[in-house]
Each structure stands twice: as C-alpha cells, then as structure tokens.
Length: 100
Length: 140
Image (cartoon, chains in turn brown, purple):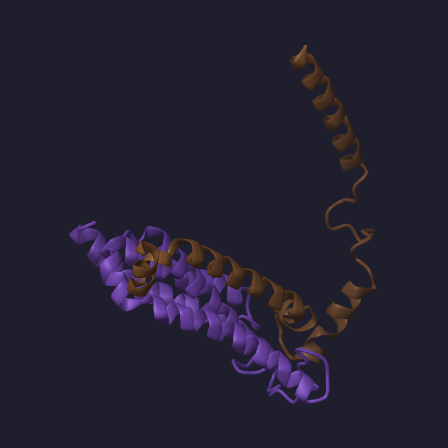
C-alpha cells in the first residue's frame, strides 16, 4: 500500500516537473526573459565603465561586488565555525581549561 | 606517506601549479578565471604538498597563524577597498568614481578595483582550502 502511494505521488510529481520543464524557454534563445535591459546594459557599457575586457569579472567584482562580499563572508563564517569546533584542543592554554 | 616518486614529482610540479594559480588570479579581469578559481588552484597545490610530505612538514610551510592572518586580512582588505568608495563620496565599492587607477584596456594593472578585489579573494580562497584541510586532518 505504501509502495503504491509512493509511486502515485512520485508519478504526479514527475508529470508536474516535466510539464513545467516543457514550458521553459530554450537555452540561449533571444526571447528569454533573462535577456532583458540589464543584460543589454552590461554588454554595451561594461568595458567603458570598468575598463576590464572580461565582462564576467566586471559584473561579479564591480556591478555585483556587494554580492561577492557576501560570498567572502560566507567563506569566512564557514572556516570560523569549522576551526572553532575542531581546533579547541590544539592550543595548550585551551587544553588546560578543558581539563579543569 | 613516504614515497620517493610521489615526493619528487610533487616537488617538481608544485611551482608550475602555483605559477598557474597566480596567473589565473592576476589575469582575473582579462581572461577567464578570477579570484575563486585561481585561489582554488593555489589551495590545491598546498593540499598536494600536505598529501605528499605529511602534515608535520606542511604545518611548517603553512602554519595556522599565517592562515588566520590571510583569512582575516583578505576580508578586511576587501571591505577597506569598499570603504574607499564611501570616503570618496560614492557608494560602497565604487570603482571609477572613487578614483581608482583605470589604465589602458587589457594591461595587467588596470580596471581599478577589480584586480585588487580579485587578489583578496584569491588569497582568501587559497587559505580557506588549506586551513580547512589542515584543521580536519591534524590529530591530537
């Protein structure tokens, strides 16, 4: 009974995903909603604005630099969390504290 | 691990990997690449050193306090570059209007903020990879 229920639910989900997938625009088509004014602005003005030939670098470190700050903070938080969990006992002064 | 072939090959190949990583980082605004990918290559070369020579030798080359300085220094460098934009009267992380050196197109040091930010990200990613790896493998 559980198996049949799982199959029915998963088949329904498959049909839902496939039907929405078929509605998606073709990759790289000029009709895509993502190919909008922002894209045109970047392609037309990125080299003049930033003087960098690599438009992708211009976008991620100039136009969207605040997003990159966020990514860097994520890296810093990850390393701080991992080090605080794993490295407590490696410093001698901390070892004393844990023992007593 | 104590294998002569692995150690010799590693000793030969690491300079090439690191030069390639530095190239990717420095040319981040000209060719494909950038701080994240170049930093990953640099970090991978240090991980290769740790795998070939063992943790004790690697900890001498790349101790934890160097990693800590690089970690915090790189992110503070990034934020300081952003604050220059505010003090110059623009937004956070302003590039051209904040008076960064623009230079000629496709030279190595142009594009103002972008190579400086890429340098910071590269150091950050490399030190993150190697610090995480050392933290996980070191045993008490």
